[in-house]
Length: 223
Image 1 (cartoon, rainbow, N blue to C red):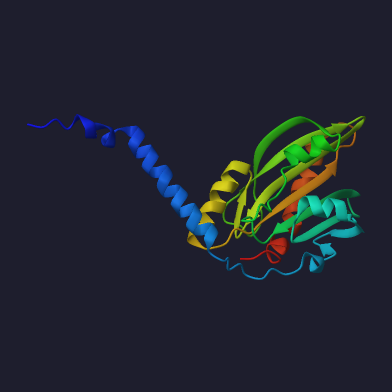
Image 2: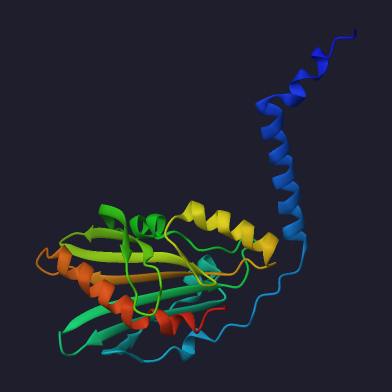
């Protein structure tokens, strides 16, 4: 009988992996070739000046050079203050309508050190937001510049999904491109100054601020 040893490779794990890669590449090319159908988002400029007990006390000006680097379709940079507790927190949002042409969020992991901030702690934490059935996971960083310390929370928000990991965000992007024909996303970042080395208090301030604005912000992102 003729030997079938020449075809043994077809049943190997390497052939299966290669097949999956070819299929994934084909699906990726198909997703990229279609024109996206992203729902219109409400302009971030219309985000309220008051969220819960927090009131806007400053709006950052993002210069053209920074905008050219970010390449975001919409930006928000504000500082909020809670009078009762005298707490302050900064909110930054960069919205990208499509990631197919290379426009995508710049990870704070890279941006913060580039601005002179040195990370001293990093973790992914889970937090409960009133109105959501499940807790969300966000990145938590403690960074320092000279004698200053800040607590940073950030995440990627796509549709009704919150993702901490950059790698998972990319996987979801490809899945959404194939299934929903859209790759929109937003980078959301909260920064709170650490006073007297009280990192725990700064973390609580950041979490309280997030719970105050989270549902309102979701109204300004495509659903």
